Amino acid sequence: MKLWIGCLLLIMTMTACERDIDIVPNQSAAKLVVDAEIENNRPPFIVLSRSLNFFSTIDSAELLNSFVHNATVSIQEGNTVYAMKEYQVRGPNGNRIYYYSNDPANTQLLLGQQGKKYKLTITSDGITYTSETEIPLLTKTMDSLWWKKAPNNQDTTKVVLMGRVTDPPGLGNYIRYFTSVNNQPFLPGGNSVFDDNIIDGKTYEIQIDKGVNRNEEIDFEEYGFFKRGDTATVKLCNISKATYDFWRTWEFSFQSIGNPFSSPGKVIGNINNGALGAFCGYAAQYRTLIIPK
Image (cartoon, rainbow, N blue to C red):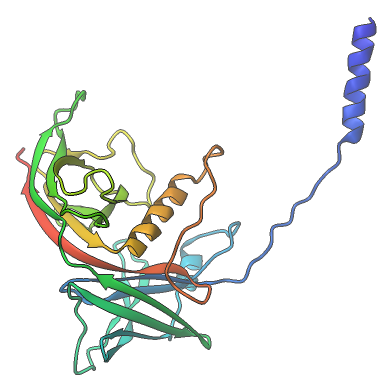
């Protein structure tokens, strides 16, 4: 009886100590978000938007309103400055997408070149932002592609894609890869960036997971696999350390969403003046494999 009374008193004491705590999240000011890239032999591609609050209700209208219009955008290579123009396109689902790229009214159009450095300048709402990137030389290369039956899988239509990659001697060769299936858009791998700390100066074989659309829920039963009959194209890109650091930290943060045991992380961008995002340069190599049915 004494034990029961003691427990009751303890519960009453703990209950009496409870109080309601209302947490009101800060409404931070929207920041410019930059998703910019330039690839060898291709024009630049720059998407500008405004950040959304963490507790915002995100729908197609909210995303459409987040695009930044009428910004002054240019890219400088050497002593030449190339003005960019804003474009509108409709995505596969009918949603509108806005981006900046070469202005056809210019006498010269910018195409990326290996070994060149580029400076991006953006002026929006009276504030100027800058960033620099480079397209490195294509020194880390993909020698060949082949496929293998998916191991430990009863579905005989699934296969894994293999590649042989040669890393040049000397640390500091960073890569990012994408895949395309049957001429669909290129998608980055779930973990898309790698350094050469372990495989420096070696030729090695590696499984190449199929790229993922991070706007859709990932089906882990299908993750990484290709199918018999697919035409698979791999885009292997040499990148700078700044581009590597951005995507490495971005992917870590993305994979930590909803995980209460994950460590907090900061995405390392390369845009100044408080903007978010990155300006990335890619030295790309493409290889295609037709997987027989």
